[in-house]
Image 1 (cartoon, one colour):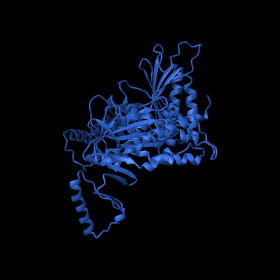
Image 2: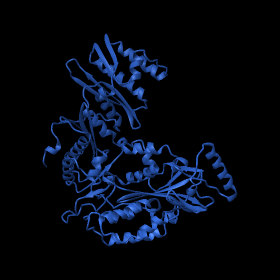
Image 3: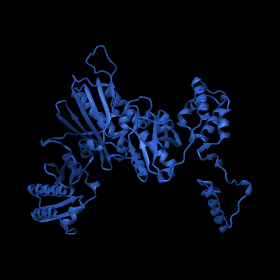
Image 4: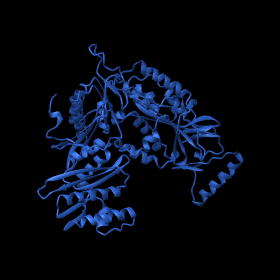
Amino acid sequence: MEVYVDDMLVKSKTADSHLHNISLMFRVLKKYKMRLNPSKCAFGVSSGKFLGFMISQRGIEDNPDKIKALLDMQTPKTQKDIQSLTGRVAALARFISKATDRCAPFFKALKGSKRQIVWIAECDRAFQDLKVYMSRAPLLSTPLPGEDLILYLSVSATALSSVLIRKSNGIELPIFYTSHALQDAEIRYPELKKLTYAHILPARKLRPYFQAHSIVVLTNQPLRQILQRPETSGRLVKWAIELSEFDIRYHPRPAEKGQAVADFISELTTSDKGGPADIALEPPSTASASHPTEGTFNPSIPLWTLYVDGSSNRQGSGAGLVLKAPDQTTIEYAIRFQFPASNNEVEYEALLAGLRLAREMGAQQLKVCSDSQLVVNQILTQFEAKDTSMAAYLTHARRLLHHFPAYQVQQIPRSENSHADALSRLASAIDDNIDGSSNRQGSGAGLVLKAPDQTTIEYAIRFQFPASNNEVEYEALLAGLRLAREMGAQQLKVCSDSQLVVNQILTQFEAKDTSMAAYLTHARRLLHHFPAYQVQQIPRSENSHADALSRLASAIDDNIGRHVPIEILSRRSTADTE
């Protein structure tokens, strides 16, 4: 027995068991003194109307009256007629494959006035196709308990669609069709983000199915990798968390598909605007035969690679860039801004500085790598620059890009941009102390020693041995103590953001690990060289200068000592004219 608000439905597989099931129902009703209206009851029926649908042993069909109302409609002549048409389609949407795509021409027709709509041949074809489709509307199936269900996804230029199906004796039977019209910012999503959004929508709308069944998503796109990669952030993180409560598996699409998913053969059918790694070329010129062909770099022309990143926090803002020449020579640059700037603005400033540097170095072909989704997609016209400041930066960036015969702009994960990130943090940081950094690229330490006259000594150390986070924190401390001793310091205040190191020195924590005990002994031995000293833990936000140096040391991939130029920028790049 199933209950829907004030409606009850008793289902039985055989006629013999049906009487027993009805008897059980009446016992429950009698126990709770409930009464039924005989005129609204129907017994022993093999099919009937329930909750607006026709229920039978074959499955779920839509109300014939609703279908007839749509089939009998005349060609719309006013805006009200089109609204009536789309309203009737919405009522039948669960039975219609890609309902929003089928209605797209009708939405275009609404651009006319209330009395005079723009009804063209495309609208008429869509109207007739819709009638033909509804004249043979699909029969929806009901899943069995514990049965695995299959989900197909599809993305078009205007809508996201899906179909949930079950397989019975090798035949694909639809359970529910969903469709969603892309609105505002959703239209500017990258293609794979749209596909991920198309995945989350049925999980919300068909939540009872997702909770009661294992779902197999058939896709040839890397949906699982997108949702599970460590650098996933923003909406994708929220969507990944939302989907994590369900039992979802991802399998490649089979070569053969049934009639139920005929409209879902192609997952991505949007207009070809290019992905996040599109090649942008200047228009071909007859005077320059050496220009690369459309979509490719010319292998005979040296290729330069530029990594850029920006950093903005309450202490200041800065940019870092790494320019790699064709012979793998690396040019590093850090810029500190003397004006307030948002995260997006410093990302653009980093890009503009990198483009100016590449132009000065005579680069002809340039590959630009940034971890800023907004900057990359605005340049590739995937996102619109509505803000005045962003529009000015975008115009400036495009003007600089036109100096290169061929260029490529692509978004990369933050983990692949750690070198430029460390430089930007170094530029934006001020007045800090000791820190260590250990990651999969390497480990390093950074320290800042301030003399009584406020003279500052900065130091970055890269380790050529594997080290844990706690070990590099100790190495940073030991290096700082040795430097302070060599400088003749008598009284020393040591600041570190490592809770473990500070509390072990202050005897608040015990060094149980052999490695930590050895480091602690060494640190205390060095501290005894100072007549007076103080060791204190500070928040990481107050230790950003040393943190930036440690990140810089751990990000580089060679052992050569280096001098990193730091430029001070007093006004925005958009204030200048090229």
